[in-house]
Length: 500
Image (tube, rainbow, N blue to C red):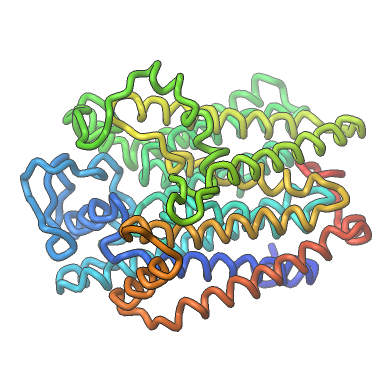
């Protein structure tokens, strides 16, 4: 088996340069979010850091009250809702080993910085998973897809916000992405041993990080069963199903043995395996019934309408929502074009591709169902809850943007540029909310003031901006070359969502 370095060297030059550009663009964008966001972070940042602190001190957090000093005023045993107490502890155990001593010494700002850097590096791992998947299954489009897919995956603003903060979402998204990538490859190429081992480990680690990964893990196991049925025709059907079910049972036993105790712990204290407390009113939130959510357009448009940020950039650049819808419409139209072209080609071996489409659709449907359950009561409609399906969202954007035969490189570049630009703008908008009668100059002053308060040299901002522009230019050039008709013909075809 070739080493990762050898595998990279075997890629076409434009793919290597394109991936280098995507890595640089991602690092510039996530670094901007890291240095601009106050060290106290976004809404639930303190809860995540407090969980780390409590694990470092040998116990799990209670449903109410916080203990971490410095970042905010602690209230051990108090009445303040602990937003992360229901999460399984894997991420927090890992981070406690990294930043526990810093928190012990009172250097909580440094602890937050280390946590953010860790999450940013997790984003790089997700980028690598997406690049591998794009190259593995892209067919004639494998070269441009290996560039576009990692970009459209990690540059989605909802992910960028957690990759540049102390949330555990990025870590959970990594394992969900690995499960989905292995499941897709197994469906298209067959259930190989290495894929099954990696998928099983990632499923267990994902569920040990966030309970929302249960849906993805279950779909991964179902995909393996389907892969055995489709790709082992020499076996009797009973054997194919039996082997697949046996694999699923092994993953289930491993998951229960590793983290089942925590879900029982939640069940004991709240009556629900994924809550730490009985659901009660939350200050500032309106109680919504199931019908309220089902009749709310935001519920259905939370993914296509919020790719560029959870809220509109009012007072700064109020085009977030319509621009996101336009981006989604362009990419979905590109998918339709590709699907019609593939149907006319009447390519053999279409069943595995159909199963991949079904997998993607069921993953998103499952996340919508979980979003509906969460939003009913005092929850929120939030695209962040769809991050377990981030790889699927990235595939829709990447494959769809490459569906325009005569403008593939340009459309894909435009989509990537909008995603990256939106991540920058959303970070600036987060700070502009606190500026009365905001003007461009006052917002820039606010950003500069925050960066300096974070102890970061102000020169960092233009350096990151220039790096992002240069990286985007490299990505554009690589995509332009990779989508040239002659280069597409040189790519070895594989069965997959791309053209043959």
